[in-house]
Image (tube, rainbow, N blue to C red; front, top):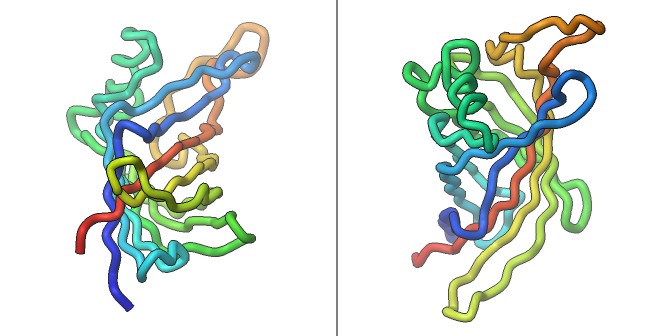
Length: 178
């Protein structure tokens, strides 16, 4: 079967996260600069090989002080480790339009297996004839497993930043000419 290459449509894609703050609310953030490439057998996404990278320096939580803290050695250490990376190892079909993507996530110098739930939105052509595929992804990681350990105890009990980080993404891929 023919290998199909897919590239990110960055204007119709986003990568984000949410983390519990002070045990009472969630703070959201995103990466403004990232890339996704995939290859499939034809249009069969169960055969997908996926590569994802995000530039740590592009982190945005709508608060420059917090963003700088996240880029510092307390968290991502962006100067030493400028990118996050995910490489898929398997795509598991869970229903008509639902999949689980298994892969290895590298943050700083730590690589761990993760699973992401994926809802396949389908394939369609845009007004300019480009064939596109759409996906909604979600997952959860424990940030301390990746060496993102900074925290502060609260006077009322609990901690300032949760260990669990919820991941979400809306991804549109464009089929590349063969």
